[in-house]
Each structure stands twice: as C-alpha cells, then as structure tokens.
Amino acid sequence: MHAAKALNQVINHDRTIDWVINNRPQWLQQPLSQELVYGTLRHYFSLKQWVDAQLKSPLRKKDQDLYILMLVGAHQLANTRIKEHAAISETVNACKLLHKPWAKGLLNGVLRNLQRNPQNKPDRSFDHAPWMIDAIVDQYGEYASELLAANNQRAPQTLRINSLKTSVADYKEALNDANIDYSTQPWADYGADAITLQSPQPAQSLPGWAAGEVAIQDLGGQLAADLSCQALAPTQRKSSPLRILDACTAPGGKLFHIIERLASQGRAADFTAVELSVQRAAQTREIASRLGHNVSIVLGDATNLEWWDNIAFDHIIVDAPCSGTGTIRRHPDIKVLLQPAQINQHKLKQAQLLTNLWHTLAVEGTLLYCTCSILEAENDKAIAAFIDGSQANNQSKNKDAHVTPISLPSGQKTKYGWQLLPTHSNTDGFYYALLTKAAAGNHSQ
Image (tube, rainbow, N blue to C red; front, top):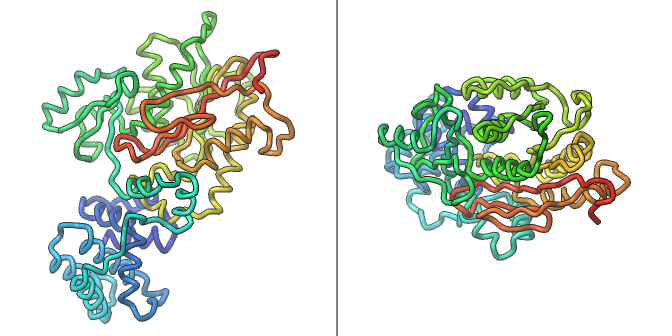
C-alpha cells in the first residue's frame, strides 16, 4: 500500500521520488516498497500498455489509485520473483485500504488475465516515453537500443572514500570485516577513491558512515575531481591559495571530493559554494558536517553576480541543472515526469550560467562544465552556443574561451568534451567539457 501511495504522488501529482523520500520517508522504509516503486517506474510504459489492454475503458480520475494498484500488481507478475498468487492476493486486498472494496473483482479480473496470458507482455526494451526514444535514436542511431536497454537496469552503488578520514585500503578492510562484497574502480588513473558495492545497502549501515569516512557518489560523478585537479595542476600561485567556485553546489559531492583531493595533496585552496535553494543548502551543510568539511555555502543565484566579491576564481565547476537523462537507472521517475519543454528551460539556464560565471574566471583560469544528461542539446550544443555567443542574449563570440581537450577511460569523445554513458555498468551518463580563459592576444578562433 505504501508503494502505491508513493507511485500515486509521482504519476498523478508530478512529484519526484526525492520528494517522497524527503516528505513521506515511511513509505519507502521497507525494501519491498522500494522495489515496487522503482521497478514499476522503471517499466511504467510497458506495464501501462499491458494493463490498458485489459480495460474496456480508462478508469475515472477519482479511481486512478486503483490504476496504480494494477500497475504494481502487473510489475510483480512480470518482473519479480514474488509468487503470483501472493502478488494478486495482496494487490486485490489493498482495495480495502483504499476504502474501495467494490473494486476487488475488477483488480482480480485484470491481474488474473495478465497471469493467464504472459505471452502478451509488451516489449520492455524501449521502456521510455516516445519523445525520449526519438531524441535518443536521433542522436545515437544504432547505438540507441543498447542505451535504452541500459536505462532499464539498476544503477550500482558506488562509494567515495574520504581520504581525510581514512584510506581506501583501510576502508576495504572495514568492508571485509562487515562481510560486504565490493569491487574497486576499474581504471588505473581515475576514480582512485571509489569502491562499488556488489549489492546496494542503506548508507547508514556502512562502516564509518557516521564518522564521515565515506560518501555515496557515482563513479562518473567522481571523475569531476580528477578533471579539476588535472586542470589545476599547472597553476602556480605561491602568494595566495587557489580560489575555487562550485556554482551549483548541492548536494556538494563534487565540491567535497575536490576539497579532499587537494587537502591530501597539501595544496591550499579557498572554496566558494553557491546554492539557490535554502533547503538544499541546509542539506549540503549537514553532509559537510558529517564529512568534517568546514565550508561556507552562500545562498545566491549563480546566473547573477550579487553574491560575488569581485575577486576572480582560478577554477569554476558548473554542475548545471539538466534533464538528468544520464541518471534514469537510479531515478526512473524521470521517464514519467520529464517533458520536452523542460529541455528548453534547462538550456536557457545553462546558457545563463555559462555567460554569467565566465566574468568571474581569472585569465588562464579553467571552467569545468558538467551535466548528468546524455542529450547533446544540453551538452556539446550548450558549449558551442556559448563559444559562438549565440545564447543568453550574448551578441558577440566569447573569443577568450578555449576548449581544452579531455579524455576519460570510458564513454566517447565529442567535439567539445566527453560523454559518459550508462551502458558502461560502472557509471551514470555524465558530460564534461573543460574551458580555459585565454590571455589577451591568445584567443581561440
């Protein structure tokens, strides 16, 4: 029943799973509830097609809670190891909890028909909204089917070891002592602080969690620290610490990782973190406190300069708001909630951020632009538009913006950056592009 309530908020009220976690945490406390919510959303479009074929007409608006129950029951029959009779019985009995006992016969009939005709299950390999399928096919061609299938899988749970609290070797011993199976990062020169669990588990149950020894962060997201530290390696500022800006900081994973990396290298740096949301800033402060980082988070809008002290930054991270299409494996509600118009809204915000923050970057400074999107419109095209000056009401080319080539051990090179994809089982879909602010007389064309 809790799973149905959570799904109703997502499907019928346009709320995210994160909203449910933050506002109705009791609905997802049980592992079974989590499986039913995430699994039903992961296969929403095929389940909907399967159930709709059993209905003579759509249910009334006031009975959409019953429709949610049908989807949950169908998911159990199609995609779980729950015994069929138990799945049907529990789903039908939930009608009482909805105060709609009259619907028991209807739900029982629909689910029994599904049980008797499993061969009629629709193809779930393209379990996305039609517009999203078209966008991915247009961009990725023959590779699209592999990408769509990957989005239907579960995401790995990867840990980031806080090098200021413990070492990777010591944390492996702690995992061994706790009988938690894991694998280390697969690349020699990247993701050195990462450990991936063989089976996900609650964060609070991890060794050293309360002491701040570990955080949860996708391996693709951890590469931001690798790229940032590489970009900062040539910088020589003996008279003052490096000045680093995280322009869209919440929940702070990339920022905290860079803090840990630079501190472990003995490199001094001053960090400015900007966040627009009061609630997300508070959550980020809580995470910083657990990890042992004393970071000042400025409440401000990174599309304007009201928060800036007019001292230029050596390095800026722009983890731009985006569609999140690279994280569908761990946020399957994106499949249901994301609409094409939102892509254009994100594009506008991305353009405003790039144009505005470029003014705060020092000459020869670097800006790392990243998204968790797999859509070119939010990635390479955003960088192209910034360089050409064709976005955010900018009427001239940003001639001092020089694209610095990057290369990562997974994913694919793009014209302006690098695209990680969820087809690599270790990473979500991330995009990175690195820009350097050229000195006068050394402008890119």
